[in-house]
Length: 351
Image 1 (cartoon, rainbow, N blue to C red):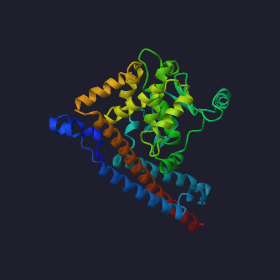
Image 2 (cartoon, rainbow, N blue to C red):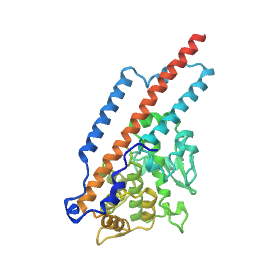
Image 3 (cartoon, rainbow, N blue to C red):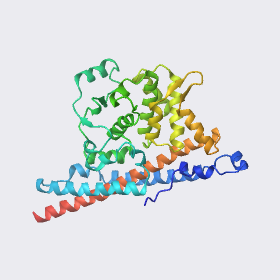
Image 4 (cartoon, one colour):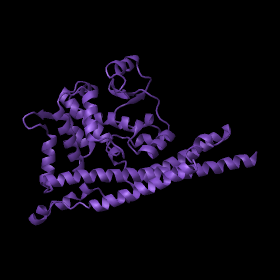
């Protein structure tokens, strides 16, 4: 059974029973507790980092001298500790909950190329046409990591080893590097239109819906990233990278997705809203996303300020879960290195 505290939106049903006086007072969010937890975890993680940097623990993975016949044993040892790392993160944190809908967790242990996803994925060399497009159209500032093609996802690099994922998790948090890229593309799979094939749904998405679809994918894949980019930078990135002309559509998309996630909707539910969404220029809103946020706010007796507080609390809670995952990954890595050192001692003592 999971030991972590439920996210704030999981307690919203109780908020629906508030009296008129309580509603007037506003939603009770314990920001002081959230900030205290965040500061304590940051301090703990920094302490572990200082320890590994002082004794160069992480460098030990590259410098340990292990004979060829023992490399298999060493790898099996690391794999076993890595599997325990995943189990600990799943039971002690909520960091992987956003990966339930995309199937990302299935690729963590056996490799991202062997995960069980909604669509097939493959890792190949970048085609020359894509390389030239990035160089000419984006002037080298925007690199295509992957894309939908032939009803699946292509990635233009080698699949990362579990050790690469482990180190990335320690250094940057759950949603970083290849993990972020894969999750981003799989989010698009959740935006599938029922009557159109997946590749058609994404590649032929109208310009305005492309703005919403990309914002959903970027926002969701960055949701559990400890150092996720500011919304303003994300808007600029999508605007330039995907040639989105209407800035209001991006601002509204970011706002709607933040609210829906804070109100408890998962990526599959948001993806289905995105699939049938359209832009209302008069109100500068996305239907039905904004309507759904308004419906939930009314259901839980929340004012606009309450929802804004929920969004802020949700961001802080996600940072807390991300830090917990990083701490566990680093603790287990330290144990793994100590075990490897013991293994090398056994090797040398037998020689």
